[in-house]
Amino acid sequence: MNLEERLAAAQRTIAALMRRVEQQAASGETAFSVLEQNIALEHVIAEKTRELEARRRELLQAQKLESVGRLASGIAHEINTPVQFVNDNVQFLQLAFGDLVGLFEKHRQLRDAAATGQVSPELLREVDEAERAADLGYLLEHVPKAVARSVEGLERVATIVRSLKEFAHPEGKERGEADLNRALASTLTVARNEYRYVAKVETDYGELPAVWCFLSELNQVFLNVIVNAAHAIEEARRGEGELGLIRVVTRRDGDSVKISVSDTGTGMSPAIQERIFDPFFTTKEVGKGTGQGLAIARTVVVDKHGGTLTFDSAVGRGTTFHIRIPIGSTAR
Ligand SMILES: Nc1ncnc2c1ncn2[C@@H]1O[C@H](COP(=O)(O)OP(=O)(O)OP(=O)(O)O)[C@@H](O)[C@H]1O
Ligand SMILES: [Mg+2]
Image (cartoon, rainbow, N blue to C red):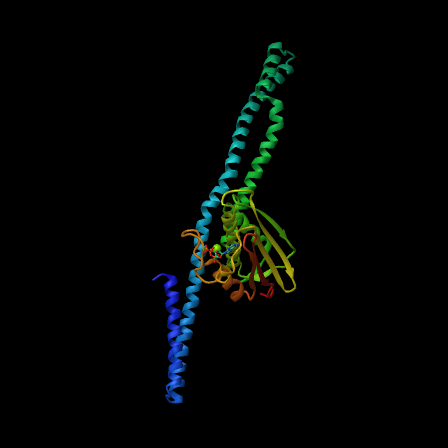
C-alpha cells in the first residue's frame, strides 16, 4: 500500500470507530460499559492519530526528497553555464600567459645585451616582433577582464552550491532562528531553472527579524509556491509573448512576518480555488504535479507554525499567495 492509501485507510478506521461509539451510546448499554468502551476507543484513536502524524511526516520527507531530486538536474544546468564560462576564460589566460612568457624571454635577452652594451638591431627587431605576436595591447586590456569574469563565474557557482546546501540542510532539523529573506533568496537560486524560461523574478525584501521556525520545512513551502507560480505562468504563456513576472515581497507586520508571492499566471477559477489545499488535488499532468504541495504547505504554515496561508486569484490575471509566520519565541 502506498502512503496515500495508508492515510485513507487510517482515516476510515477512525471514522468507523467513531460510528461505533455513537451506536453503542444509542443502544442503551449500561453507562459503565459504554464508558469503559469509550476509554478503550480513545486509546485506539490516540494511537491512530499518532500513526497518521507519522505518515504525514513520511509524506513530507518523501516530497522533500522528490523536490531535491527534481531540482538536481536543473542545478547541474545552472552550474554548468558559469563553469563553461570560467573554462573559456581560463583557456584564454593560459594562451595569454604563453605569449607573455615568450615576450618576457625576449626582454630578458634584451636586458642581458644592454648590460654588456651590445644591443644588436636584430635583437631589437626580435623584441618588437614578439610584442606584436603577443598583441601586448590586447593582452593588457583583456587579461584583467578575463580574470574578473572567471572570479565572477566562480562566485556564481559558489552561490549556487551554498544555496543548495542551505536549502537542503538548513542547520539541524529542530526549530531555530532563521533569516527568511536569505531562505527565499536561496530557494530562488535553487529553483532558477524552473522559472528562468518563463518568468522574471522581482524581489522586495523588507527588514525582517530572525524567525523561530522549522526552516527546512518552510523552504519546501517557498519552493512549492514559487514552482506553482512558474507553472501557472508557463500555462498562461504557452510559449509565447513576453516573460511573466514572479514577485516576492517580505515585510514585518507586528508579531509576524508576511511573505507574498505573486504571479502573472493563469489565475484560478472559484471551483479550483475551493480545492487547492485538498491533498492530491492537482490540475497538472502526471509527472508535473502530485497535488501535495499546498496541502503540505498548509500543514507546515498553519499547524506547525501557527501562521496563515491565504491567496487572491483572478482568472487571466494571476495569483498571489500570502504566507504569514509568527516571529515566535527567540528564547532557546
Ligand atoms: N500560483 C498558482 N496559479 C494557478 N494555479 C495554482 C497556483 N498554485 C496552485 N495552483 C493550483 O492548485 C493546484 C494544487 O497545487 P499544489 O501545489 O498543491 O499541487 P501541484 O503543484 O499540482 O503538485 P505538487 O505541488 O505536488 O508538485 C495546482 O495543480 C493548480 O491547479
Ligand atoms: Mg505545487
